[in-house]
Length: 297
Image 1 (spheres, one colour):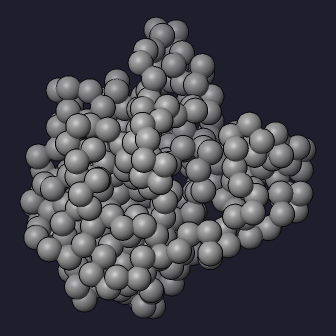
Image 2 (cartoon, one colour; image 1 turned 90 degrees about the horizontal axis):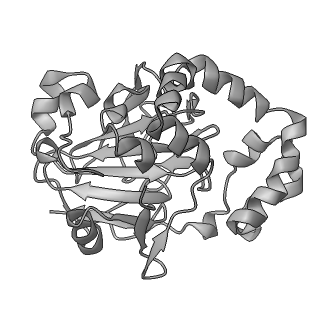
């Protein structure tokens, strides 16, 4: 199977993703016996809960330094020293120093809500061929609300995919007032391209959350977090009804790779040129939280 390639905004180069647990993923989503295990237990919440407990033990803390060294993470960005983490999970949803992720100050901009590999689409209802030809996006299925899907059908959608090696806190892409978060329960399939090349619908069948963000410049922005295998935990850390600044912390994922989706009303924003250009070629753009994702139309 072909490697996962993406364009890195910060290095200006096409790079190959280091996939955590790649052998297991390729077997589970590409082998007949793997498919049996996938449907029997891997997709089920108890499997992720079991793995999460393993990553929350004191013994798991021994994994932290080897993980940092293997994937080339920069401890200077961490708010806490690597040896202070009491478990691998605590390290996984670590905080970063504010200076490590400066927030674009332009009041006309919207910023990426998370570190990750991003795809942007001008019309949410016209998304197709993502990761593989022939796959069409189901907006109503994603939102669990046909009326809401109709309202945002012609709006801009940005899919941000986080890998296990990424910083796993997510942030508000714009200033505004967040509402209550709605949970749509579901299974926990992987959201790696290895899995999504087989079935894009994992994005709108997996456990997910939706939070409306009322803004003055960009209308009501829908912010979604999507759980995945070994990411059954999506924690919200904000207070509904309390105004937030652009780039403020919204929450975090516990262990594993996952995704966020940012959805705008029609005509609210224009995607950044590099995000639009690479997405047209079905190439994800790697960019860090706080950097420009779009601007007011």
